[in-house]
Image (cartoon, rainbow, N blue to C red; front, top):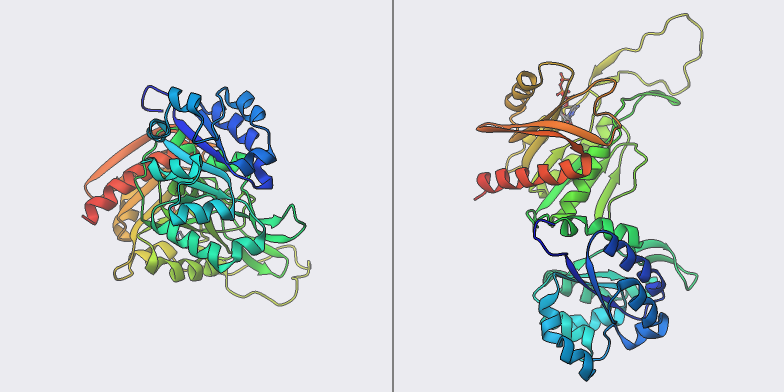
Length: 402
Ligand code: CTP
């Protein structure tokens, strides 16, 4: 936190079965230094005893709008002002409908109306209820009013059905809140960001390929930090074994050509493009239909240049604010600057690469260049670096798009 006091969260618990996970959510939020005031609806209290939440939150649970003693200690309007964030997890179809219609029949709905703090919902319900036009209409209305959503996730449900409606796991909810918890601003609110990440694989034959050592960690960290900073994020990912950050739309691809197609389909709608992928510069020219048999002592694979996705995005008319990466083994600033100019980029993030540097590690140090300026970032965790880079990208974007 940049300010002195802890981040304050009102956590609304409604009557979804996923409420059994919410004590763990409280524990994790407190471990991040947040103060958590639990507010339960009557249905929420039927799912998990308020005593559990009192124990894990260290604060008396609120539930009744007419509880004179609690209201004397902190009235509901005071409580609404106290919060830095109102999070409802699980959020049932019913609470979504109530908030959408603006009712104030209980303490939680009253707080949702009275607070000026951001409101975030982690929906949890049966997949048919989630997909019902009424719930979808409420979702759209709430999103238009600026209510944030974490999930729901897809998968097996308590009722035995499979589909969208599972509450996102507490760990992921906390990850989605990491920017708020660490005091990062919503500097990308309302913007669409397209990010590429990871390596590509260029087939040599049906079973072999040429690839590189990119892990995708930097691009995924950027995608995560961008949603936390308020952006709508699409992530075109090469083959990596990383979990999709919450609320990020992921498009999986393999080859440079597939990455180009996916990127150019999405780029016209993006405000900002960040090319973090290590896209193959060359690909085998001919790919035989059958596996190449081991006969000769040597093997030649004739490679041809593949498309430069970054340069193509930068050349789009009315295209996005374009940010490239430069991976260099020497002359970092000189080569990166040349790339910035040659590819007509708005910004370039340059880093040194080598056996022990950057690839597949958790931290990185970079040099950021644009036409009129530069900024150096000392070695730090990729998650932290991503948030800082996005602040600089947002600043430059606003200068270019006043
Ligand atoms: N890039 C791309 N398409 C390619 C190759 C690279 O869009 N076919 C993008 C990467 O996503 C990255 C940037 O170009 O944002 C820089 O990649 P890098 O490998 O450092 O530079 P190259 O342009 O490939 O030049 P060189 O290999 O000569 O350094």
